[in-house]
Length: 125
Length: 386
Image 1: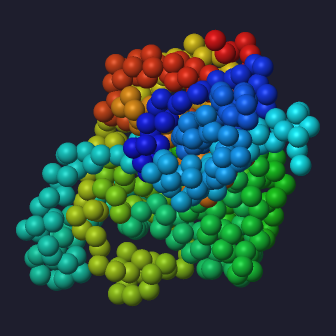
Image 2 (image 1 turned 180 degrees about the vertical axis):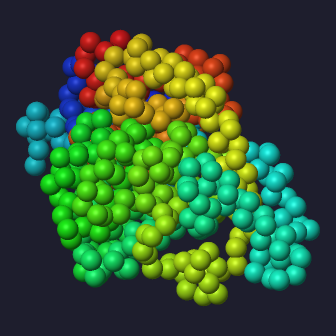
Image 3 (image 1 turned 135 degrees about the vertical axis):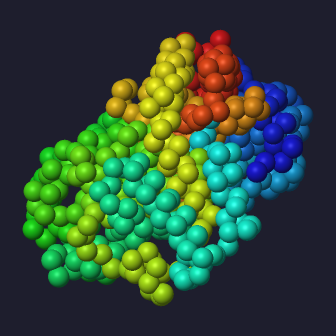
C-alpha cells in the first residue's frame, strides 16, 4: 500500500513536537474527517529556522507531515511557500491515489503557519 | 488476529475436498455411478450443514457461492415472490453490505424498506420493530451478530414479534456460525445465511437455510438444481468442504468457544485497563466469543494497524482511512459513535491458531503504540503527553 519512504517517515517521523514560542502556527483538517495537522515555525532572517509538527491521522498523514518539515527547514519563506502537495508526495516516492486528497494536507499546514507568521508581523501584502 | 477478514482452511477440510478435485469428478445430475457418487457426497454435506443448525430436513439447505449470494437470494427471492402480500421490508442499520444493498436496490423496485436503529451496544430496537411491523410487511432481515462489534441479537424475541405479524424472518449468521450454537427451530428462523470460510471452510461457497413452506423466487434460472432455486452444476469440492467444516464445528465449537471467550476477555481487559481514554465497542458479555473491539481517543485506526503490523500483528479498524469509501464504518456510526470516535476503533477477531501467548504479546505492546501516536496527535490533552 505505502512506499518504503512513507513507512520510513511513519516509523521515524522527523521534527515531531511543538514549539512553545513559535513565530507562526498553522492547523488544517479536522478530527471529523480523520486527519488534522498543526505546523509550528520559528523564523530568523526570513528563513525557517526551526519547524515542528503534530498530526492526528493515518500513515500518509503522519509521513507527509514529517516530510514537509524536512523540505521546509532552512528554506526562505518565499521558497517554503512554493512547496506544494505534489512536492511532498513525490519526495515520499508517491502516495496511494485515495490518500492524495484527504491525507496530503501537510503543505497546506506549512503555508498556514507562514501566513500566521506574516499576519503577526503585519507584513502580509 | 483478523479472522473476520479471512481464515485459513482447516487441513481436515482440505483433505476431505481433495478427492473431489481430482478423481471424483462426476456430475451429481448424471445417472451413472460417477454421478451418483457425487450426488451422495453433496447430500451428505447437506445433512451435515442441516445438523449444525438443527434444521428439520436436509432439503431445506441450498448451496450458494457464499454469504453474499445467500443474503441476496433470501431478500430479493422473498420480496419478488410475496409482492402480492405486501411490499414492506424491515432490516437494521448494522447489517452487512450484502443485506443493506439488496434492500436499497428493492426500494427502486417498488418496495418500502425500513432500517431499524440500534442502541449503544448495537442491540436492534425492538420497540421500533413492533411499531414498524404491519400486515404489509413481508420480510424482516436481522443480522445474528455483527462482526465489527460482536453484539449477539435476541433472535428468539425478534422472531416472536415478526411471526406475530406473519412476516418471514431472515437472519444473516455469517459472523456467528461456528462461533455460537444456532437452532433455527428453537429460535424461529425462516431463512438463515451460512458462510463457509467463517467456519474454516473454503471461500466461494455458502448456504441458505429455507424453512419448509417459505415462498421465494429462484435466484438463478436454469437446469433446476438445488430444488430449482439456484440452477447450475454444483460446486462439488467446495460443498464437500463446507459440509466437513460444519461437521467439525458442531463437534468442536463448545470447547473452542469457551477457550476463545477466555482469550477474548483477557484481551479486552488488557487493551483497556492500562490505557486511559479507551473504550469497548459492543456489549461486554452478549458478544461473539472471538470478538474484541475497542477504540482509543485522540488517535486514528490506520496508524495503529501499521504500528501493529510492524510488530507482526494483523488487526482491523472501522476508521474511514482504512475504507475504500473514506467513510467511517456505518456500524460504528449506528451505535452512536462520532466520526472522530469511529476513527480510533480497533478490532481483533480471534481464531483457532491464536494462543494465550499471542494475546499477552498484544497486551504488552499496545500501550507503547498508543503512547507514540498520542505524542504525535494535536488532539491529545496535555496530561497525557509526557
